[in-house]
View 1 (cartoon, rainbow, N blue to C red):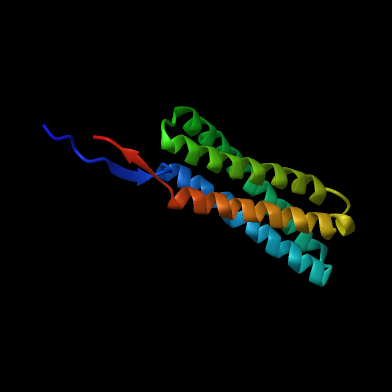
View 2: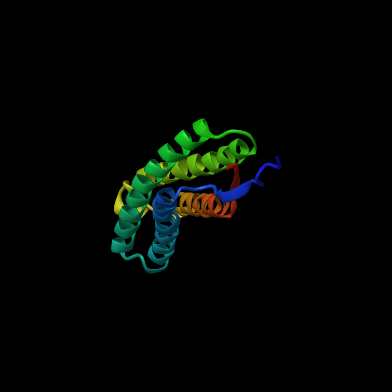
Length: 142
């Protein structure tokens, strides 16, 4: 009796994908806010960045926890995909946390070069994690 061919499903659960949208949207928004602050010196842009980073860290923390559980449950080739995804999420979250500490400093010195570099790193890691998660598939046998 022939076996049924394997099917593929996205790497992410749909709810996981919704949670991933938080850091994927908020970290680049914080980067844009940092760039605007550096060009205008309006302190409110730094405050916007701090709140955007905080929101991204909250959503990113939930996504990171979910990805850790998914990695523990993964088998076979999907385990490597989950591992890369988890590594990108961890890099995103750590850079974002350090960036949040940087943005909590005195208003005029909160962004600067370090804050901008951390915003770029966390944004790139978030976008790479989103790309990895939404373009990866896992094999499911019926």
